[in-house]
Amino acid sequence: MVIQPGWGAPVFRDEFDGNQVNQGAWQVSNFSNQNNNELQHYHPDQVLVYDGALHLWAERDDNWTYGRNYNSGHVRTWQEWRYGRFEVRAKIPWGQGLWPAIWLLPRHSAWPVGGEIDIMENVGSNTYFVKGSYHYNWAPGSPITSNADYITGEDFAAGYHDYAVEWEQDQLRFYVDGNLYHTVYNPIQPDPAPMSLILNLAVGGDWPGPPNGSTPLPTPFDIDYVRVWQRPDWVAPPTSDIADGGFENDEGALSAWTTFGSDNDNVLSEWGTPQDGARSLKLFGQFTDQANTSGVSQSVAITPGDRVTVSAQALTRSEDAITGTGNEAFMKIEFYSQFGAAYDSEFLLEELETVIGDAFMAQDQWLYHRIVGVAPVGAVEARLAGVFNQPGSNDNGSIFIDSATMAVLALSLPGDANDDGLIDLLDFDVLASNFGSTTGAGAAAGDFNNDGVVNLLDFDILAGAFGASAPAVVPEPASAALLGITAAALRRRRR
Image 1 (spheres, one colour):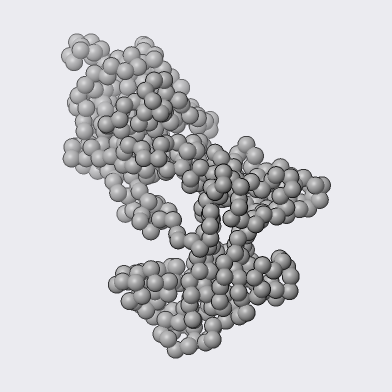
Image 2 (cartoon, one colour):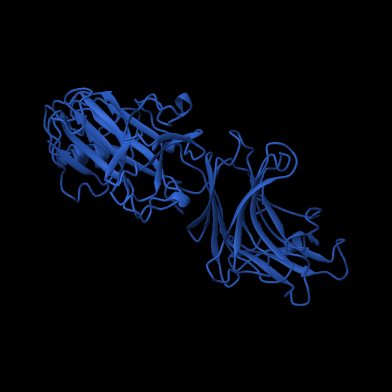
């Protein structure tokens, strides 16, 4: 089984280990393409499986057996998917006039209204680049195109490479060999048509031009495997006790949030770069020639012993990246003994923070961050804060934050799996023995968050409260070994 982080196990895969095409999974084409002035007829005889790979052979046919001077191979999945990760390992052919492609297209939607996602295209006269593209329009007519070339200086016809796209509601991400090289934001209408996966080797056409005497025919387009993933159900957005976690309300007025350090219009809800919805929070420095701090916060009422979970997605755009600067961004939980107290006042009991952006942050991709904390004795308020720090160097760079959540779960003694009033290794043993249990909400010992399954979220609760005894207090963390697989690396500051 091929587990892809964040996606789970494939919902479709073909490793081409047999000696023939699985026609229950693939439609093997037999037609002459009328588009793009291409010159080939697609015929099943050109589609072969051997040596652990699928081979789409292009060849010259001087007899015009099927009405064209060239024959080639084309397959398409019967199954269609709306959203997912699509990955194909393939070796492209070299040769003037050859046009290999890996792409997604809806069966029952007029082009380009339904969209077209080209995971990989190339023209065989130049195999030192591959292209990823998205074609779309909201009405029939000329398509709108967003595309990019991937160039490393290597010859992509010299060996196999992994070509992938991650298609989600808010964006498309194009990869080669795991390297992200193109992102399209807000790519598709809210309810797009599902698409099937197409593999083909065209001959001639408007883009590559016709073959010539140097074209090595016959020649194959080789595919090692095809894999498709879709997000598992458990990745659904978490519940939240705060308002406007998507920074959408009041056309970006941020009325649900308290802002600070925003005199230079550097704390704003901006349209056009969302992880979800239409807007996200954009933070950047004040450019005061001095170190400065800006951001937003929002609070909920709590009682000691409550488990507080915060999460958010963060992104930096390559055209104004925080990467390589002295800027930093943080997500924090702050616990106060007086509601609405000033930060760093005597009422601040504790804060937990994790870095969500710094000089080493990957660009043009949303990254998920999460903190789990337990309210200490005396706490009445938990405050979620997104903070941007700019040093006196006036470094450029900005960060986007979206899909912020804060959830409070009341627990008298979180992590006490055996109800003996003490959180210790005996509770860990109970959790481990029930790990993976799905016997219903709260039915299995160890299901501390009552979500119906004993999993790593429950382990986080136990680890965060290890050593506590009734009445519940927040202990120091247990050993590094016990905390080694918790959800976030935190900095804890305490009064």
